[in-house]
Image (cartoon, rainbow, N blue to C red; front, side, top):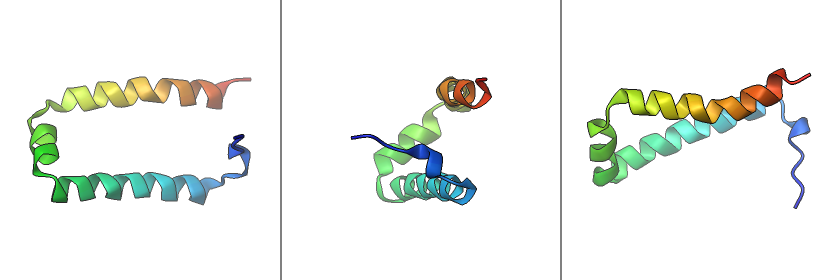
Length: 64
């Protein structure tokens, strides 16, 4: 299956990100164990993971 992401515009990406945000909030509200784990994890872990996961897309964006 070949995916063509070149047709995605600004709003498509923005809606996808917002969808992930609200799905995460949904998990917080219905799954107490997930909420407890996330609230007891130091915030720096989430920051480090987000930066590590952002490396590949940023390389692709700034690639000549």
